[in-house]
Structures are given as structure tokens and as C-alpha cells.
Image 1 (spheres, one colour):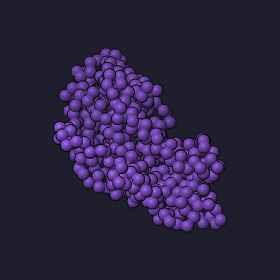
Image 2 (cartoon, one colour; image 1 turned 30 degrees about the horizontal axis):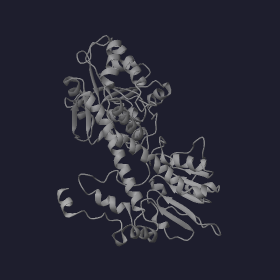
Image 3 (cartoon, helix red, strand yellow; image 1 turned 180 degrees about the vertical axis):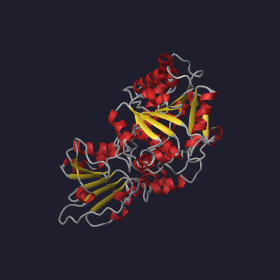
Image 4 (cartoon, helix red, strand yellow; image 1 turned 135 degrees about the vertical axis):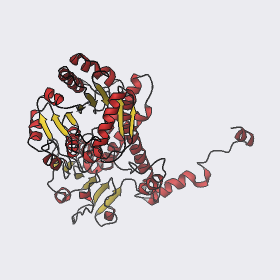
Amino acid sequence: MSDPAGIALRVSVVGLGKLGASMAAAMADRGHRVVGYDLDPHVVDVLATGHAPVSEPQLEEMIGRNRERLTATRDLAAAVASSDLTFVVVPTPSEPTGSLSLVHAQRAFTDIGAALAHKRSYHLVALTSTVLPGATRYGLIPALERSSGRRAGVEFGVCYSPQFIALGSVIRDFLEPDLTLIGELDERSGSMLAAAYRSIQRKDAPIRRMSLENAELAKVALNTYVTTKITFANMLADLCERIPGGDVDVVSGALGLDRRIGARYLTGAVSYGGPCFPRDNLALAFLARALGTGAGLAEETHAMNDRFVERAVNELQAIARGGGRIAVLGLAYKPHTPVTDESAGLKIARGLRARGACVVAYDPLVTSSPDLAFASSLSEAVAVADAVVITTPDPAFVGLELPDRKGAASTLVLDCWRLVPSLSGRPGVDYRAVGRSADDEENEARLRALWDGGRALPEPRPAREAASA
């Protein structure tokens, strides 16, 4: 639970949000001495009393059992002075242009630099927040040097080291990553951080050391690639709905067996959301434009993602325009977290409400939104619903049962994740699963019209033309 030399690391964490607080607790749990700092005094006070300042699985328990090694302070200078390594985990919000703002990071680096001015021993500053290429070297290191009066790469070290985590599994993902990315200002900085990770992580993950700019690009590129894969799967789901017997799980299940593709993020369901995927996709597109090239793939991925929400709303618009009651199940952007950033469920609920629907929402972890009515239970949400839309694969929705609405029209169920196929064919239920053919007869007629008699086949070219093509 300590470093290879048997000495506990001394670490400070600036920014105690979901990632920062989880990193601090996880490092303390691995035997290291950690002090946390945040601009919000309430967050600091909560952590200082041994409780989690944010909601994340395992966090409360981990903080509780490491109170001797994990502390919190409102004094940033004291936090830096008592540590050798500082992780900076502050927000880098999106700008209207798609760029990522450095306003919080510059403030943090300026204040850390002021603390380093009074420290003679070598100190490493590692930025974890997502930024675009050039931001660390040209936007943040100068702030450290100005406020400290010292030289980066000589008197202190700097690295850019983002984490690849998902909300709801932050601690596990931090301690057991698929890879560790280190952008290093110099060899000493990178070596120190690599050694620290080896004493922190529970599994021997590959460490990739590179320049600051390559690491900054790799972070946003990875998230953008995942959004592209999700959108491709959603495109397949749309196609599967239009062929007889179409089933995206069958198609993507086969594709996922190919090692070049893999099964993760190839489900075919609802549009992606969350605090990272949409914004990083747009940030990469901004970077490409700023550097004089194009990122059409990223831009089209974002546009296609938005169209899924519109498509779902259109599927239910007849009920919405009639003022029908529609239950939206799943308001978080994914299960096991209360985060609603760019949530497809939230967008669908608001879209239906704008079309005239009486919307009632239910999510196990999201219990309120200023513009929506919420049910206190799943059964209450669907009790008198004219339509139900399932927007997250939350286990709470598996096995959903609908009440018998005697004399009423069938309840339309739009199952975006194919969680309750048992509802298909039930009396009083119009079940539609995203990614599966709902009308084989119509789909068969469509394909027959396309190919019957070879009318859709291209005219054969003359033999000589074909041979020279």
C-alpha cells in the first residue's frame, strides 16, 4: 500500500468534485497521505469530517476508513507545502466555440505557483482536467512560473495526466485503469509520476509517456472515438428496424467478436450524454478548425446524436399532441449516477412536454428537475401512462409490469434498450423496441420493392469498361 521504497507518497488534490474526491480517497486507501483542497468551504468541511462531499459508489466508506491519512484544508499553500505531488482536478467548461475554458485551471495554477515560491524542495504538478493541445505548455505553465518565480522543468515538474473514468465507477476505474497516460514536460516529471502511479494503482496497467500535446490530443481523441462508435451502433439500430427480422443485438453481437471492433459501446440504443462525451467531441472539432483542418466526422457524429432525441420524440408525438400522459423512465445520462448532463432522457422529456404531453419522470437517483413532474416510484410513474419510454438500461426497469387499463387504448412502450421484450404481444401494450423490426410485413414489402426484378441493381457496364475500371 506504499511506493516501491516502502514510503507513503505525500499528495495534494486541488478540486474535490466526483473525480478529485474519489482520487483522494483511493490514494489514501492505498496507504498514501493525501490532503484535499477546494474553493468551496462546504466541500472541504464535509471531507474534513470524514464524509463524502459528492455521491459516488464506495466513496463514503473509503473516506470513513482513511481519516488518518486523508485530510482537507482551505489553505492551498499548506496543502502544497505538505506534499510532493499535486493533482489539479478543476472544471474546464465548454466555451460557446466548443473550446475548453482554462479560467479555473489558470487560477489554480497561479495559486499553486504562489505556494511553490516558498518551497525549496522539488514538487510535481499534474493536471488531470481535460484540456486541448497546447493548453498546459502555453496557457498554464506560464502562470506557474510567473507566480512562483521559478522555472518549470528545472525547479519543479509538470505533467498532464487525464483519467479515463466513468461516473458510477470512478474509484474502480482510477485504481484499475485500462491505460495510464502521462504527458510530461521533461523526463524527471514523467518518471516521478509513473512511479507514483505504480504505487497507487491496483493493477499493472500500461503506462504511455509522451509530450504534453500528444497526451492532450489523446484524451479528447479517445472520447471522440467512443462517441463515433456509439453513433455507428445507433445507425445500425435504425437500419435493423427497417428490415424484416432486424435485430441490432444480433448484428452488433457479431461485429463485436472481431478484435478490430470489440463489443463495448456497440449496443445500439439511445444517444450518448454525460459531462465528457458531447463536449469533447465538439472540442476536437473546434481544435481542427482552429488548426486549419477539418473534423467532419466528429461534427456529423454530434449532429446524428441530436437526431436520435428528435426521432424518439417524433415517435411519441401523436400521444404528446393529444395531451397524453407519458412516463419517461431514466433521467440521468446513465444508470448508477444522478448526473443529468446532456441526458437523452431529460431531452426527450422536455421535447415531449414542449409538444403538449403531460410528462411524469422517474429515475432511481434523480428525484427532481425544475420543469418536470416526478413520480416517487416506478409503479406510480406508469400507473396511468398512455406511453412509456425507457431511456437508460437501469436494472430497476428490468421486468417492468404495466397495470391493466381496462377500456383504455393500448399503452405504447418505446424501449430504447430492449429491457422488457416480455411486453411484446401483451394485450393492451403496443411494444416497440429500438433496433428491432416492429413490422416485418412492411419491412419485407420495402425490400421486395427495392430488389424485385433487379430494378434496383445498376445497369451492367460493357465488358471493356468493366475490365478497365
